[in-house]
Structure formats: C-alpha cells, structure tokens
Image (cartoon, rainbow, N blue to C red; front, top):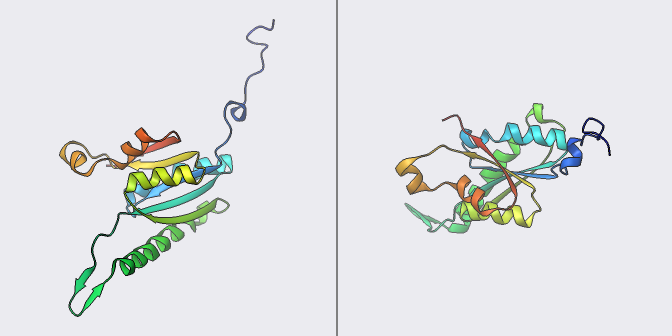
Length: 163
C-alpha cells in the first residue's frame, strides 16, 4: 500500500467538473454589478458561459399620463429594452474579451424567477450580490440573495457589496 506521500494528488479538475454555465443576477445598480468581476474570473478559468439576467418585478397597472395611457405591455417592452441595452453594454467591456456572454431579461418575482431560470437553463453557478441590508429594511424588502441561497440546489457565490 502506498504511503501518503506516494499517493497521487488530485488535480482541481478531478475534484469537481468545471463550471459550464454561470448566472449573474443584476438589478441595474452598482452594488449588484460587484458580482461581475468574480463571475468573469471564474468563467475565464473554467471556460464557462456567463448569462447576465435582469429580473423586472411584475408590472401591475397601466400608467396614466395627461392625454394618454401607457399599457402594461408597453411598459414591459420599454423596461426590457433598457435592461437588455444595459446588460449588453456590460458584456462589451474590453477587459472581458474572450468570455462568452448571453443576456436575458425576465419579468416576475425576483428570487423565484432567478431560481426558475437557473433550473430551466442548466446553470451550475449562481453569482449574486448581497446588498447588506439588516434590521427593518431587510424585513420589509426581504433578501433576494438569501431566498435564492435557501431555495436552490445550485452552487451559489454570494458577493458582499461594498456597503
């Protein structure tokens, strides 16, 4: 029987398969964007595709403006287009050349939509920023990151924002 020193040492690749699909959930804030750098770093090492996802909470009412009504569908189209433009611009940073990106925008309850997206798109790493809320603010707003962490079976990397 070989001694401990004689046994082959496992390589990183032998311990776990590399990530293939990384999901980064963004909300348009600089705090959420802090998740990008570690996600792109992991993708650079593992060769994973990175999906940038922005979830827009459900739109419940048409907007009334003097002389016009903006339908829920029109609001959704406008928000989706703005979100897609924002996400696409993030992908084009010169320092991230060579990383494979996709962008997607979805509407729904944020945490649940992230979880559904990860499950439906074979995501094997979710990278999300925690905004560091505590006390009453956390109780009122909830924590999307905490909900995702508690409900998923996918590996999650929580990035603490610079609060």
